[in-house]
Amino acid sequence: MTIETREVSHVTIVDIDGRIILGDETGQLRDTVRRLIAEGKKKIVLNLAKVDYIDSSGMGELVSSFTTVRNSGGELKLLSLTKKVRDVVQVTKLYTVFDIKDDEFTAVKSFDYFFAK
Image 1 (cartoon, rainbow, N blue to C red):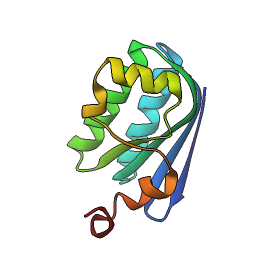
Image 2 (cartoon, one colour):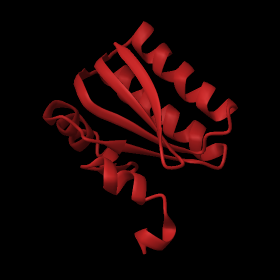
Image 3 (tube, helix red, strand yellow):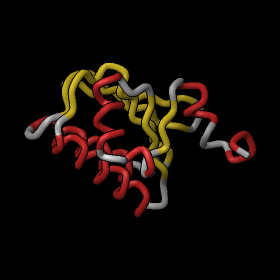
């Protein structure tokens, strides 16, 4: 799994490529989110467009990351879920927890409260 971060107008996009599964992958995601929080990044979008598989540990890490960001006064959103990831989110009913966006423009703009309302 590879993780790259980039800034798009005041929002940090985390591009994830590969599988989010128990082991190094979940640790890598956890470390990335914690590093962003330590750097003062409060608006984070996890781009899952290239995630072809996620297991229960991966889902747990997404929830943990969401909680970590929320507890630090920030927001974490999900972007471009693949069919497999979307199915897991549906089955676990976590779509009620996460703010999920289909395109990057909408995801970035959703942090702008004037646009969102």
